[in-house]
Amino acid sequence: MSKRWLTEHHSDEFHKKSKQEGYYARSAYKLLNIDEKFNIFKNIRYVLDLGASPGSWLQVTSLKLDKSKTKIMGVDLKKIRPVEGVKQLHMDVYSDQLEEEIRTYFTKGIDLVLSDLAPNTSGNKILDSGRSIALVMRAYDISHPFLRQKGKFVAKLFQCAEMNEIKHRLEKDFLKVQFYKPKASRQHSRELFIIASGFKK
Ligand SMILES: C[S@@+](CC[C@H](N)C(=O)[O-])C[C@H]1O[C@@H](n2cnc3c(N)ncnc32)[C@H](O)[C@@H]1O
Image (tube, rainbow, N blue to C red; front, side, top):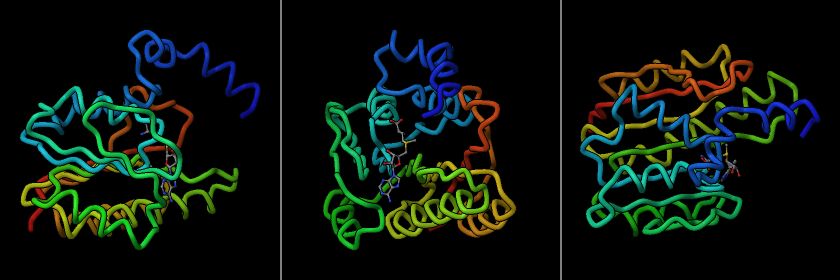
């Protein structure tokens, strides 16, 4: 982490807010912005969160849903902090075991897949975008067989030439696919979210 990043981070409005409101990371506000705009938690019971550490999206999801009627699973290579009522998997999304874990836990399928998966950035834009695209496609390949009718898929990606190909790919399976940059996403960051809704089983 550079000195500039640390200075910006600590004076950042969303970083301060996350400390005050008890979220594990400022990224919580990106998901809250997405929900304000797209109402993603409406009619949702089963949620898979890929790239979930430290766990702020899981905190938001758990607050938005009635825990007695839902199932939420978070997956990450890194340790996820505790979130009540959430199943955590310490696993690589490229692991062959993941599919079986998902199948066993979500016996009725998944309504909403969230992916905030991010590669370790190298500073090389082409390489980083390639890795980010690969993670989005991996997230979609994993979730596709489990998504229920009218399901939703929300994933982070870095802006790049291939992003429209991903949009076209998702448009084959979903009624609506849009890009969105939440207010809480840093302006100089190339990250963007793809929001797909109305999965056609
Ligand atoms: C931006 S962070 C997620 C933040 C999280 N949404 C939150 O709000 O707390 C991205 C995460 O993707 C995870 N990740 C990257 N590649 C992964 C992989 N191959 N398998 C599992 N997790 C991965 C990283 O470990 C990192 O924790």
